[in-house]
Amino acid sequence: MTDYKQLGNEAFKAGNFLEAVQHFSEAIKLNPSDGILYSNRSGAYASLNKFQEALDDATQCVALKPDWPKGYSRKGLALFKLGRMDEARAAYQEGLKIDPNNEPLQAGLREIEAAADPEFVYLAAAMAQVVAGNPKLQEYQKQDPNYTMNLCRIISGMKNNPQSLQHMLMNPNPAIKDGLMAYLSMASGMQQPEEAYEPPQPKQPPKKEEPKPKEEEILTDEQKKAKEFKEEGNKFYKQKMFDKALEMYNKAVEHDPDNLLLENNKAAVYLEMGEYEKCIATCNAAIERRYDVKADFLVVSKIYNRLASCYTKMQDYDAALAAYQKSLLEDNNRNTRCAMKEVERLKEKKEREAYIDPQKAEEHREKGNAFFKAFQFPEAKKEYDEAIKRNPTDVKLYTNRAAALTKLGEYPSALADCNKAVEIDPTFVKAWARKGNLHVLLKEYSKALEAYDKGLAIDAENQECISGKYDCMAKIQAMSQSGTVDEEQYRQAMADPEVQQMLGDPQFQLILKRLSENPASMNEYLRDPKIAKGIQKLMACGILRTV
Image (cartoon, rainbow, N blue to C red; front, top):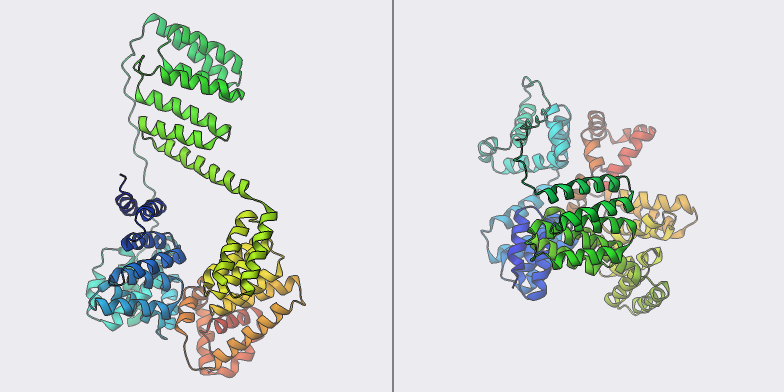
């Protein structure tokens, strides 16, 4: 019996996270009550940045193993990455009730607290400026878009534990060490002499060794004649003169009938000519003779690959996959595995397309609507799922499912459906309105305003976009005048590359400083469209406030 869990663990360690998900999924089918399998798959999903799937698996893990701290750690991380800060904190705290000394849970909690610190925005702005003025750090930023934010988290941790400074400066990672040194130089007001930055030099390709002369193959006179005919056939094959190529290969077979690669060449000609039945018959006849002529495994593998290619051309994907499986038993070749994955993709595509039926999609949509009106939202979602499978280009189905997901509190998934709808049809105003509403629920007010504006650019009279935008602006105003800081919104804002860029801009930093000293200067800055856009963005994100 295949140990899918072990295969999944090995794939995970090798960084093959998609393959790990597939193996863990197979293991779950065999043992759906094993919470550790869900935890493992959650980790693989998180590594693929599929945090909603990671959360689903982590939740199932906690349900199956409520006394296992790691499940709460997985759940907390997924919630944190989805921006659901309060829920993430609760998950970490729940795990710490079981194991108060658990380091991953404590670290997760510390990361949440660091992101919620009001001083974090100023630290982020300062670090963005440090990175912008240092070519070496800029190179690190290009390699890792989260580099500046990671430095900020480390520095925040050092403020809480100054003794960790020496340990961090001994970090073997030069990116971390250089970043901390640059920050300390800035903080102390001293300018270190900057080393001339030299971009990493491309590695010189290793010198190719001169190929050693091969020992001359010992061939009989008949085999030499066969080789000559084969080479002639290859020339005709490359010129797409298939009849002449076939004639040469047949002559080669007459002189060397035990060479199955010649039969494989003939099969290649039949494949190019579209004579698929002859190609299959030639391959099968050659495979039947493999033991009689003591054919090499590699030769047999090539023949199976040719057979698989023929079945693929015929769109008989099951037969093609079976042939590739047999080829892998002969020679576990990377190219064969890649070809097999492509056939699997084609098979799935064909099955999806065969499943499309707009009439049945409409039937499922109507059932979904009935469930929705009856407040049976899980059932409504299932019907919309089926409707989308039956007609994946109908944008109304995505907004319907988004509505059901919204009622279920699955805001990120609902937002993904709205994004899919506007991707299919950018003029579908209802999707823009729903998208705006979801951004509001996620406290992403600047993105909400963008969505409403895009909808209104298509239909200036759309009431859902008009009322949504009005409500969103009212929330921004109320938030701006309040004295409280929303941790979740703050975390999301600081992860926004546009916000990071603004906070790292020296000119914008000066504007923010003047606004903090003289709020009445706001009107002056709002006259400049470029500055006004940035100010409105920061206000919508909750970073800039009027009090």
